[in-house]
Figure 1 (cartoon, helix red, strand yellow):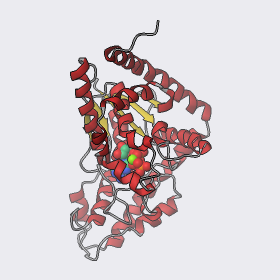
Figure 2 (figure 1 turned 30 degrees about the vertical axis):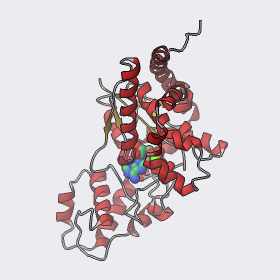
Figure 3 (figure 1 turned 135 degrees about the vertical axis):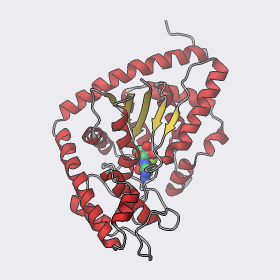
Length: 332
Ligand code: ATP
Ligand code: MG
């Protein structure tokens, strides 16, 4: 079975619709066909200051949401990144293999540091794409299911894997991004020119899966569209409507063409009202299942402990081989 690896940050508490449609939904599907490793990336979370108690709670909350979304610990390996120390260890080697200019070209860093003020951004935020390289290479992943915003980091991973293999001999599998075109980028409902994001969205434009369903319905109904009246998929001219159609189509399994035909001659209000119902039907059971996992922290922690053990077995082997290739003297 080919292997997949991906991760999600335990920041902001609730996952948002972009996380689910862009990434987690694919993770659930891929556990059927792939040897799948999924993690809550707490090391990545601290690239931006986190309150320790919140970070701990949000890490459990992220794991609970992944289970609620349909990850099955019998069919995938679910773990917390900091439970596997090899991530930080391999990241150092990858840091030493990356050019400063190469790292400077990462657009996610530019976006995120601009938001904080470039002087306040940590060195960790600057090098987080390189930690991501280590995350992926440690598991010899063939594919990396992520949203469009992560494509550049998977490219960096490929470059560094090729570079390492060329310099030290074949060590790492060269991974490919696994990005579904339709859901690669879900947009902010209030500003359909920017991606929905945990850290950057406006509260009204961000669909949190754990919000009160009433709040979610309200946000859908007040989504920004355009001054035209036609319900048609056209990303360039009608980004707001197109975003709603993408969400609607993915959550119901009905094609965009079918939806366009159904809503011909209808008003935006009708589309939004129906989509609000679809959303509520999706988030209500998701919230309940998340709460059930949270109510049983012992089971949750034991899932994560078993996951970490399985992950470490793979990660330790790759790291040992890497250390050897680099020329580190083995500890006797
Ligand atoms: P932040 O803004 O703090 O980076 P985030 O909203 O991007 O948070 P992450 O935990 O960084 O959330 O991302 C988890 C996964 O969700 C990644 O694979 C990412 O590509 C994907 N993702 C995030 N936002 C979207 C979006 N708007 N559309 C599609 N996929 C997304
Ligand atoms: Mg992100």
